[in-house]
Amino acid sequence: LEALLRFARPIASGLVKEFFTDGLWEAVPASWREPLEALPLRSLAELLSGRGSVDVPPGSPAWPLSLLAFVAACHAERLPGQLETATPASAVANGRCAEEALLDKQLRRAVNPKKMHEIVRLGALADRLGRAAGCDEMVDVGSGQGYLSRALAFEHSWTTVGVEAVSSNVVAARKIDDAVRPKLRSQLEARQPLAPLRHVAAWIPPGMSPSELRAIIAPGEQCVLCDEAEGEEAATPPSSPPPPPPPQPPQRSALLGLHTCGDLAATLLRLYDRAGPPLGCIINVGCCYMFLSEEGSDAPPAGPRQLAAGEWKVFEGRTTPLTPLDAPDEPATRKAAPGPAGGERGTGAAEPAPSDGMPEAPSPPLPPEPGFPLSAFLSSRGVRMGYHLRELACHSTVAYSQRLRQAGSLGEEGQGPLQVHCRRAVLEVLLRRRPEYSWLKRAKCGAVKNAASLPFCEYVR
Image 1 (tube, rainbow, N blue to C red):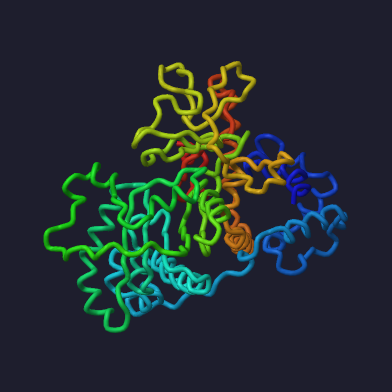
Image 2: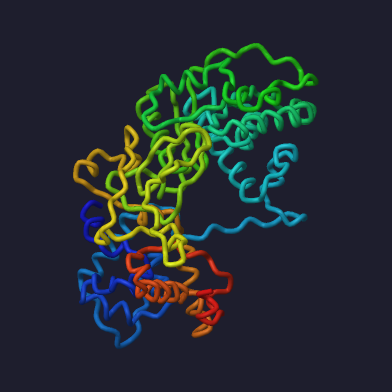
């Protein structure tokens, strides 16, 4: 894996448009170019999906052994699960999704089909795995407004603690609990009891110890952030029944994370590794790998985000703690110099090249333990991926393969959507020719509706 990453990095870390703007095609080994250029779109789709042999047109140049070895190594090292498109679930009568029949209507109020699918499937998986591991509690990290936590507690009878960094989400989760619990009690308790459910406002920082996590989720822990942020709204409504007596501390917890963004996924894995028997199993569905912190990473093409108190903001591949709901006055990027008209030049998302003579902005500190790589071996070997490779890891190869197949089946008419990168490349080249944009590189380009069908001048506007 290390050797493959080192070999492919000059190509894989580039953007599609850089094949046009920066001559990235010249970085591809010369013996590979002619065979790859001869492949039709359907064969490129097969090459990407890894389904058997690639249909090479008659008379095409022979593939060198190095290209064959590279393709085989890529498919050997890839993670499973993206090779086949899942069979779509049949819709129910009202046009939503099949999972609707598996979730009580009180638990799916204001839940879209995608979220419902995740709640049903992940809830069933967590139930099976938690019981097999001998757990007696579910800890749902990043629980939001508690939809998955609610399903675990009320559908699967798990004692559940939802841990959420945004206090307003915790307040909303408690209100939903109070609204649905009386209705569910009459509907579900005939076949199964409603298990205890608590929501705690807390942040899980990189480097948290298992004992610190246990202190957060311990029975009787109060939602201090909610009470401070929301005042009287956080109090239990007068009409609610009195709270049950505090439960006994659990002996073994299951750690659960759905859409653990960036470093949160790495933090949960480290917690599970270090906790020993008190954490019986972990179910983690990560997302937003580009927001993993990584030493020496390149800059993402995006501005700073507003996050909750103490959350680590990832920018330029590094992280920095934020004060509550405050973006920094000086984000970790360079401000564009004023243009001729007095405004700021560029898009605000582009990074000037180091050779432009502008001073580098100071780098914010990494968290105690960067999110990538988790492997001590890869870290010791200095293996790095960078923002764009981690962002690419968020995408499904199935979607790209389907796009290529569709374009290939439609002939010339189907290739328009594939040419959007060419338009972005031409736009960037034209901008670079202007002195005030000569530093422009990897500028973020907003999505343009029906871009492929617009005249180029209209696309630029």
